[in-house]
Amino acid sequence: MTRSGTNNHKKKITAAILLGSIALAITLFTTVADAAAPKIPHKPDISHPKGSSPWPDYGEKPKTNTPEVKAWVKSIDWSKVPKLPIRHTDSPGDPPECPEKEVPEKDCWWTCTGCFAPDDVFECPGKNEWGLTFDDGPEPGVTEHLFDLLKEKNLTATFFVTGMKSTKAPWLLQDTIDKGHHLASHTWSHSGLTTLTNEEIVAELKWTEKYIFDHTGYKVKYFRPPYGDIDNRVRAIARELGFKTVIWSTEWDTQDWQLAENTISSKQIVNIFNSALKTLPNRKKGVVTLQHDGDKKLVPMARTLLDMGMKKGMKPMSIAQCLNDKVGYNAVPALPAAPAPKKPTTPAPAPVPPASGVKQTGKAEPEVSTPTSPAAKDDKEEPISAPGVVKSTANPGKKSSASTVSAGLSVAGWTLAAVIASFVL
Ligand SMILES: [Zn+2]
Image (cartoon, rainbow, N blue to C red; front, side, top):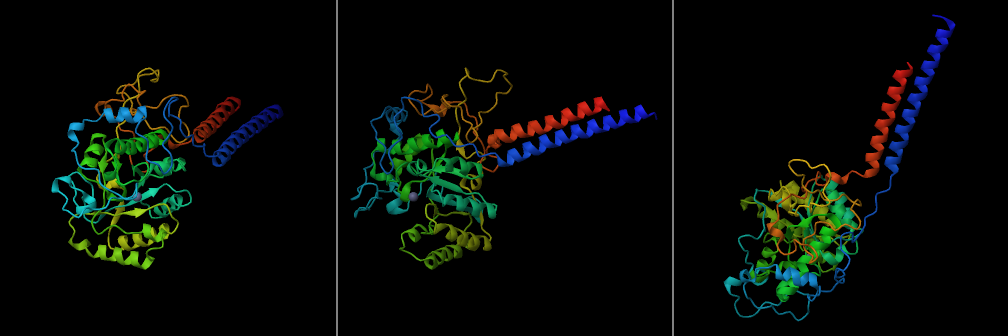
């Protein structure tokens, strides 16, 4: 080999090392950038179109004289809703008082008679299955700890959130889905539904559905009446609006909410749960429990109860999982043709819920509930397209754009280096 040939060879090696270093630097930089990439902030109210009524107030029953509520009321076949009395309460928002005279069987008023309708969900089909549910959130500083606990135990649960609480922490809705959990409705203002007018019930259910949809792209399917307060009038309205009612198994109300009120001790809750556990061997089916989000004391209690139940062979899971409902949400109508992607594919792709923080500002989402939407009248007849699944793979768009760009740059860096290096060498 000549000197110039050796020099040439050295130059080639130097160039290769240089290019390799550049590629490594690009990779390291983009990886670090990815790790350090801040979470894309959530953007509330993205799809609440201009001209819509404002979200209902915190702690208030939603108004019924808005165009939205009028349109939702109009979408219902009222011939399917029985004319039962509006139940009495001394304190609006609270559950009703049960009358002294007997409640007619046809009312199936759970609150006062414990009656379940055939389509009420109050147990899981499989023996030892445990429909794990947390009501009354989201609550910043508490819900995250429940997420941590469930992650530690590799479990998913259903979170029955209220619309009003969601307005205080809308990012926790998307987080619930991102963590692989199941979102469901607990109405807007947490009022006893049998004490409300038909229109008020519609407003409670639909505003909550809309709020959750606008912040996650998921249309909730399951709802739990506050206090379990439901009769056949409320059920029929919920059914007409596409909701499935979830109550809980008799004897499996943990009473944990009383911890926050200091009206019960942890030991008493453990005793209540122990009594419920004793019924397990005689149960052919699984159970649905009632637990709560919303107070820090409830998180260690949730841990205690999970440990107790799992020790007895119970298998905790979300309501959608125990019902083997692979989607867990109602179908969202297909996107309108105009903004569809340029390259049509066959079959048409199902609309995917927007990933956190990557919603399209200014474009109305496929919400069908507002009077501005052409599909507002009867979204139940729209073609069905699953918006996602319940498990951790629920949100295929979850990967941040930062990590996608990062991965792309890393690959591009190495490819570029390889091409140039092979050319030089
Ligand atoms: Zn509640």
